[in-house]
Length: 132
Image (cartoon, rainbow, N blue to C red; front, side, top):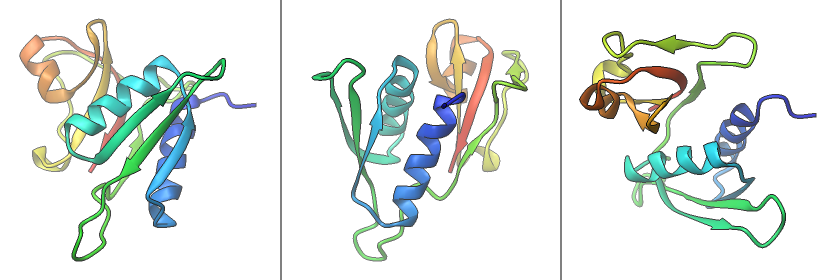
């Protein structure tokens, strides 16, 4: 039984990076699709595709690696808010990841966005994860 689907999503991506896989396939949900879109727009993944042929659907993510050094674009994925301990932040108290070099993904009332987008929209929400 999977009680934290976002942690499962992050773990699958983390394991695929450690195994040097090019593509990882993950069961889909709306929040996972939004996190995938944020990762793509911030340049952490190469491409993605949503496959809705089955009931739940899947997300296929093509991971991004440096062509010369073969180092992954994602160094660390860290889950912040868990089902047992939710972490909420106000618009004036948004987290900074690695002094602005990383990204905090936040679920807000206006959708899933990064902390920089939250600052421009002046909204707070639940901190889902840190990516760097």
